[in-house]
Amino acid sequence: MNSQQFKYYCNRAFQELSFRTGISFARPSGIIIVLTNKCNARCVHCHSYKLENNLHELTANEWGKAFSELRHWLGPVFVSLTGGETLTRKDVLAILNHATRNGFWVEFLTNGYALDEVLAEKLIESGVRRITISLDGTSPDVHDKIRGRNGFFDKASRSVKMLVDQNRTQGRDVLVRLKTVIMRLNLHDIHNIPILAKKFGVEGVEYQALTPIYYSDQLNNEDWHVNNDLWVNSLADLQNALIRIKELKTLGYPVLNTNENLDLIFRYFSDPNGQKQKVWSHNYRNKSKRCRSWMGLQILPDGGMKMCHWMEPFQNIRDGDLSSGWKIRPHCWKEKCGYRER
Image (cartoon, rainbow, N blue to C red):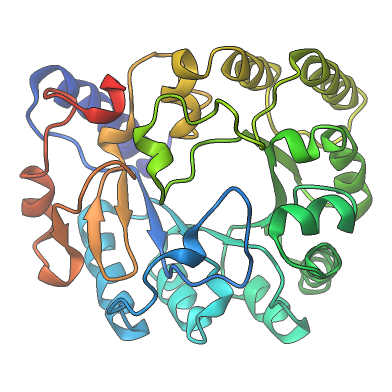
């Protein structure tokens, strides 16, 4: 066991102690960074593009300072750069380079629409460890309908091929993967995505289940899925699709979900309120029923720091003194949490 692994397991032990005592012994073991709310898609299951886009976003230099402080505080933890659409920021490569130079294990998420050969080359050589491209169908009829604009399937497919080619050309081992959200609009097509993933030569496809639109009133409505045009209402069709995906996985097609993950997705669509804690936090691998979001750290485009989508920021990263701010964050795991109560 190397020193970083030792620190990781020590932090996990401290996290358990923090949960039981309510005292902040532990630190976050990963960070989700929302670089911008701006998006060039109009996805039916996400309303990021409707959010206020004139926020005082952190500049690339401010992100550089923030990453230095985060590294000093947390060490080289997992960092996920997401949006909105990350590539709508003109300075995104500078921000990405600040993250990788600080030694973080960096994931970069994009819908691929704005990617070109130059960007693909620079992304692969940046030191990023994983690039995740959203792909919700294997044809324009499916993917473009979900993305809300024409041309997204062709652009995403081209982007995946460019990244795979650059990976090979540069002799890198960047993980390129697809992410697919399961909903009614693509249920008939989701079993085809591992076949396309193998053809692309990517690491694989990770399936996630439809969740409430984060930036909407659906979060406060227990019946958000009722009469929802995106909700999977045919459990028989879902079961058949998941069985086919498991068969493809057995045959060597690149499905990143475990069979247990896929079973959880089925149980979630059968009993959305009973399974929401794991699915809404994308924590499918957590065997415990309790919420783990209390140990998460999300940083918003303007620097606001919070633990999950359902809470207000407890500090701004521009204020510095991150460790002290973390210790005074709301102890939602010990107090009443609106998310867990719903």
